[in-house]
Image 1 (cartoon, rainbow, N blue to C red):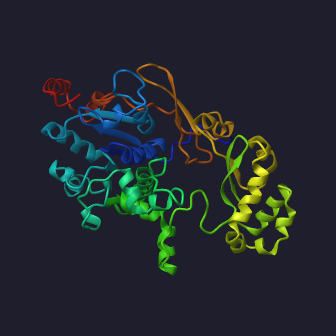
Image 2 (cartoon, rainbow, N blue to C red):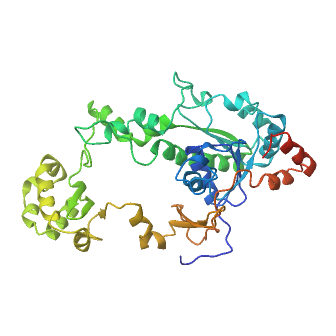
Image 3 (cartoon, rainbow, N blue to C red):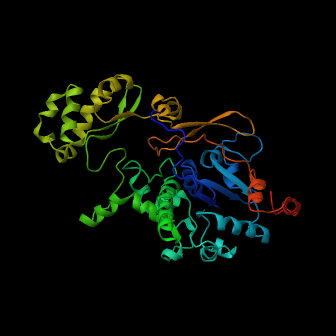
Amino acid sequence: MADITQGDPAPLSGIKVLDLSHMLAGPYATMTLADLGAEVIKVEPLAGDMIRRAGPDITDEDTYGGYFASVNRNKKCISLDLRSDMGREVLLRLVAQCDVLVENFRVGVMDRLGLSYESLREINPRLVYGCIRGFGDPRTGEGELTDWPAYDVVAQAMGGVMQVTGEAAGPPMKSGPGLGDIFPAALLTSGVLAGVVRAQRTGQGSFVDVSMYDAMVSLCERIVYQYSVDGSVAHRVGNAHPFFEPFGLYPAMDGWFALAAPTDEIWRLLVTLIGRDDLGSDSRLSSGSGRSAHRDEVRTAIEAWSRTRTLQEIRARLGGRVPFGPVQDARQIVEDGHLARRDMLWTVAHPPTGAPLTLAGQPIHFHGVARSQVRPAPALGEHTDEVLAELDFSDEEVARWRREGILR
């Protein structure tokens, strides 16, 4: 990486985040904040975040699977019982020191613990409280589904993703990645940072709420305006695009590749590169609407060329000239030198074993600012003593709470 000033602080250096989240959505949001330099303290129950036990397992201890390791890097961890008076006291002291709190419990959980946004705001008026719910928090708009539980697949189903994903003649299909978790997480990160800016400007904190259902509707914005404009309900079109052609996946001799030529200029270049100038001079195909109207003919012509060539041959012809990319699996991604040079493959030493563990890196890059060394996801309760000492709890108190089984 060029032009890096090693002494420059990370963008979120000095921001302190209290992470009460679990599973994927909340931890992904706080991981992003941690990657960008925030100090993130993850608070887990005594049994740990349930995804610690999600595979693939790295050790036989069943408390540090790959799922957890991927989205909890760069965080500290304390483990305590928030239902206990001690647990709440620790949390309240942390709230007083933190800029941000993130949680993704069901509606009402924090309130029942005596840790509602309203009570925490009394302790720290500058606190930015971020939450992800399946169907939103009543504070920002109560609907008939507010109390419903949700997971990624539910949000994808209801928000439109599955209705427009899959083959035309096939059933609705969820996306491979957990869009119903990760996209809300990305939105919450933006909202929380907007709240931090507001707090710095006004001295006032914020309650920031992202609904998984809302987020999926936002992600599927195209199907909403289509319905508004002409009353059409979008359906599945496989790997094609409802408006553009060519735009989708095509077969090679040894795999598949993505190709997009939606503009007239790129279309003319494409047909020249594949030796079909006759298509470029065909008036029926000279416009995007014309190519869409004759999409079967366009696809047949491209496939006739691509099926007789390897991906390497196609890359040599099209790569860097028209939008093209092979369909890659995990092995190919990890071995891609471009990603390595982009610092998108992070390696950490797995704490229990010391074995190297490769993770997908942080795609938000800042010119001139080097990222700090990535730290592996913490062991359960790894930083409990350190954090409690900073909160001025005595060694005797900590030892007693451990004996009482309310602290790990």
